[in-house]
Image 1: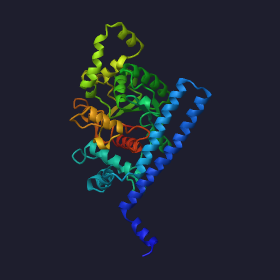
Image 2 (image 1 turned 120 degrees about the vertical axis):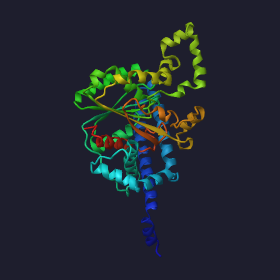
Image 3 (image 1 turned 30 degrees about the vertical axis):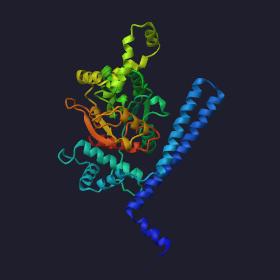
Length: 402
């Protein structure tokens, strides 16, 4: 048997084709990381050489750190074995249930609740897009419809340490391939919901001039910030907001802020009458006291119960939670799982049950997908593109985007 004939036989093996396609995708990611990192480093270095001040030095250092992280992770993934979850998703898409859901959506037929819950429908849509991004040989069933909506990204906690906003990589793909308008609001990951609400209002007012409904796609604390914005400015949002989709947002607050170690550190606030404490508190939010309060489950759960009826109701609300085992997580998420241990399903930061809407609020819960809390970063190998595509198809299926 010739080598050429043997290779031809092997190429027909679907598992091998999937393996090779997954490797091809990872190689493309590495090439993209190299190209984008080089461009960003060159720009930052030029800015620093033209004006060597502290601000430009900080920017250059951040680009160096994030670019090296992106390149390192992309190189490591290229040689990492194909994870079992990928093969499980491929097998699921072959199942009778998955095929029924995909065909029903493609043919614009209603799926009764006993045939498929919202979370099951969304998962199936996501897998259809995710595998198509990872394996060119997979024939995707669904297509992204045309929508006349502006997507506004809202990032979460400490997003300033990253070079780009959460999910910007996925949003750029959506814009380039489907001509769907997107922008992001530069909220601060360490400021209170009240401060960020005002910033969202300023950005929202600018977007209204485009005469398109605004769809908020919010990650982590960004979801809380948008909820507070919607409550505060509900009258102005009635005709201009299509809806809010949250990803890993602690809608009912986070128990992490109530951890005993954090409480021990916060005991310094007992010195608030001290003049030295007061001086630092005037200069900045000392130990992010107000910021922590806005994330606390004690505050946010009560706030939601008291204010949900004031939120605009002529728009949609969807929520997606994430879960990840410690060995599936980003290195920082591994540390948080070790430090902030929780008996509940979580993504390393947010407990899944707190990232979904409670029963008394008629929001749409999209269930729990596998993923750690940093899937929105540029260097993540999570298929952000598929996640946004799945949201668009699902919302269009329910008639909520157009």
